[in-house]
Image 1 (cartoon, one colour):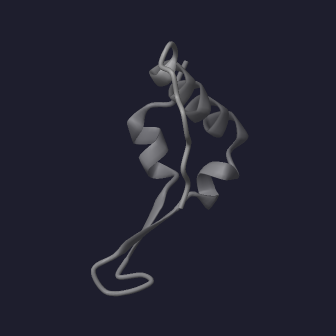
Image 2: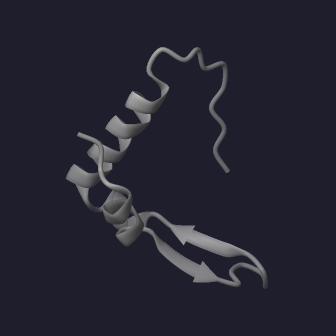
Amino acid sequence: MPASHEVLRSLVREISDYPTEGVTFRDITPLLGDAKTFARAIDGLVEEFAGVEVDRVVGV
């Protein structure tokens, strides 16, 4: 079962105006530290894109 949006949001810190004013940095370190919830988040991504042909995945 995928993790709920509320649980995911609670594990992602938002840091306003970092690295520059007007930018909100989202720190996923707390999510990575919670193995069960991280696995459920990945399950949710898999479920969302099941049957979709993906050509590329990009990370910034």
